[in-house]
View (spheres, rainbow, N blue to C red):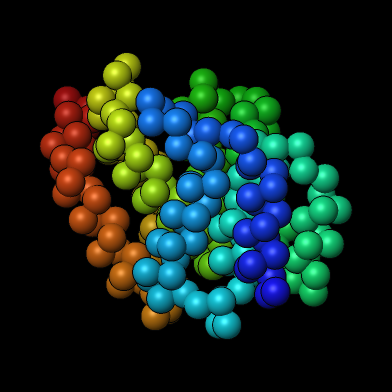
Length: 197
């Protein structure tokens, strides 16, 4: 097995029995599977891009499970440090932003820091994560925040800008996916409503 397959097995083990939020009771593992599929749709392969695909499988392990760090390091073998660091970049903790004015502000600060500090391939994983979560919000819109898909994509704009500055075969596919999603969620209308009058 390669590192991508090993991280898939680790994610499957640690997310086992957990469901995604929402009314459909979808097993949690469906989310990292969708993130990996999105990265592959953008052109990543296990042969050329093992680290970001492995990170995609494990991107929620530290944030959402009690997996020991050593399990990730050992599972990822020669790529252990890169995979673990990639997962840490993608791990959000509200406590890291004590000056934030609420969860949304902390999330904004996290996304801005990620855009400044994370390697481009890890930013691609974050964008794939945002794309997949946005699609989930579109299928099962939060009743208390019907415009969440648009806001959620907006928060990823610094990451898209950072990725767009790096020459990559994937950038045009990524931008096309995000633009199509923005069109579907009425992003332009939402942006006009959010602008200060």
